[in-house]
Length: 136
Ligand code: ZN
Image 1: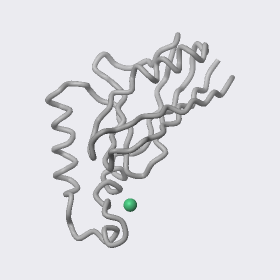
Image 2 (image 1 turned 45 degrees about the vertical axis):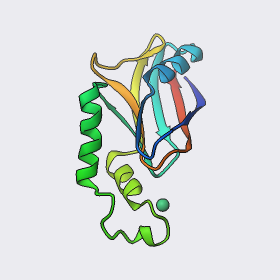
Image 3 (image 1 turned 45 degrees about the horizontal axis):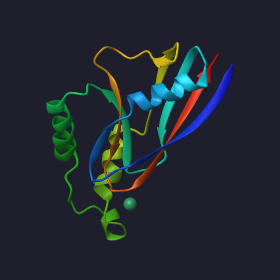
Image 4 (image 1 turned 90 degrees about the horizontal axis):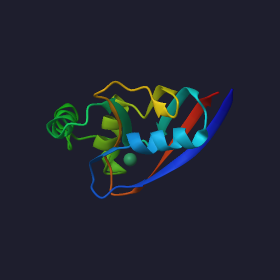
């Protein structure tokens, strides 16, 4: 078994932004030349998230509306006294910062309607995602 690591760099343009990174992850898998294994997609930030779901334009808005409802932008958060982004941390905390997906023959074994997303909740920023490929 081999373990390979690649850093994916992303630049976001808005405070809250969803980016479909499925093709970039598959490109890293194809480049690795590993045939079968697991890939972990890990965001190295505490105000962003990684998730898997459907890339449909209405649903992309629904995700953002839901996190707005669950974690309002302003709610007398204590962290806002030192850094005005408590909502971003709390949204990241409930969604999670990584996903692990099985792969075979150079691409992730995702369902037909599944994509891998990076969600920035405190942009615009330069972001780094670690892709760890474990396989043979
Ligand atoms: Zn903060």
